[in-house]
Image (cartoon, rainbow, N blue to C red; front, top):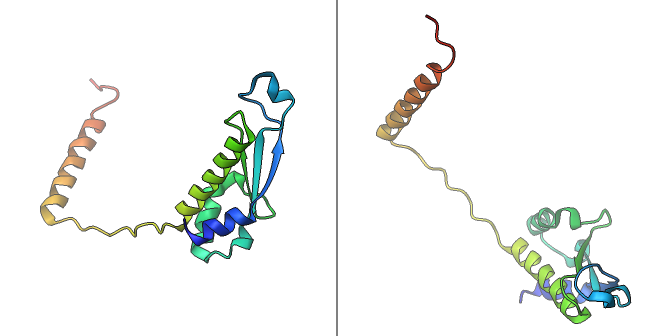
Length: 134
């Protein structure tokens, strides 16, 4: 596990709330859903990783800079807590991976000619559509 992920998990604040979903009548009595909060400013990320994490978080990022994850898939607090922590770790790991730089490709002359010929065929097909003028 990466050091940033460990830091995030140690800084995470958990609160348990009542949830809809699996649990039967127990759902109305017991707070099984977990709400996990982590402030991304406290993680000390590089600017590039910070931007990627912001993009990955999307609507789960609050104006205060907190990533808020709700976990309510399971019937128990422990399972939902593990699920929320796992999802946070996956999100941070994905942000830490640097995307591959796109390599610009060049097309040789026969490829250009072939492409232009295909475009010409397509344009004549489309030009011949429509009303027929007798």
